[in-house]
Image 1 (cartoon, rainbow, N blue to C red):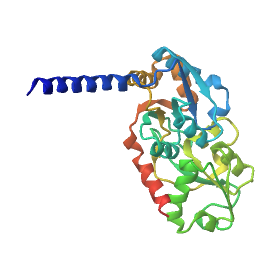
Image 2 (image 1 turned 180 degrees about the vertical axis):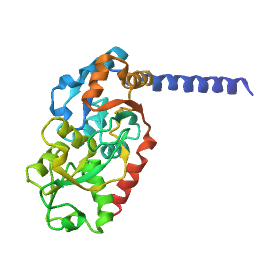
Image 3 (image 1 turned 90 degrees about the horizontal axis):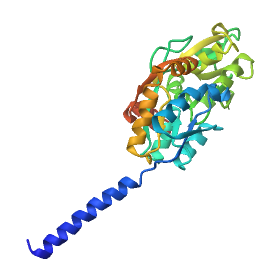
Image 4 (image 1 turned 90 degrees about the vertical axis):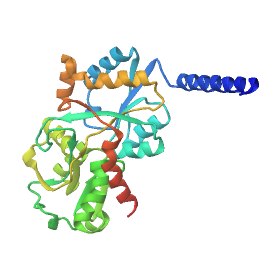
Length: 297
């Protein structure tokens, strides 16, 4: 190797090393972390419910934490894609939608739920199609011509599963089966719409239906379950791919160890969960398969 070649290689090596340092320095390490969640029964209640989570995040990261109250599933997606929100709880379907647009988004955890009225134990849940128990609508054969409530276009159990898994059962599109298809804006709103007779039936997530019952607004006996979906993974907690690796690790550990404190256990109790469990992007491949099936219709 000539002297000039050696110098060139050395300079090239320095350039690579410098480029690596620049890339490492480009990660985001903000003074304030912004956190948001898709609209649920909990997010419409006192924000103090989330204080143990916020306190744990502050202690683990040394950052202030601000809560962004969303108006829809899409608003959480757009806030994360735009860099306004650093940590978000998405629905499984809205996470897949967001991750297609920004593959750097990283899912790191979800809830392991307690067994409830309709909810099964663990980090999964189902969509159930329910009617009011005294409505006379008890089977799939009773559905033609009735009014159905969906939740949100980006909801997994309130839109994706009904339009893929349920339509495979009935052999037709929802708009062909029901006289009217309406979006209520929330699982609690869907449950109450059935109870109050505003819709005849609605697709609701099992853990969200449990929440409405636990709040004393309805009773388990008020509903018939007409159909249940396969088990799908719980709502993913996701971090921006722009955050520095050490910060992401601290955030992850804050969630996974939340149940080790008294306040954390109280928070988990309030959301009917036993703990947070680690999740990966591959855990949501089942949702991608459902989305693909829907998109190909």
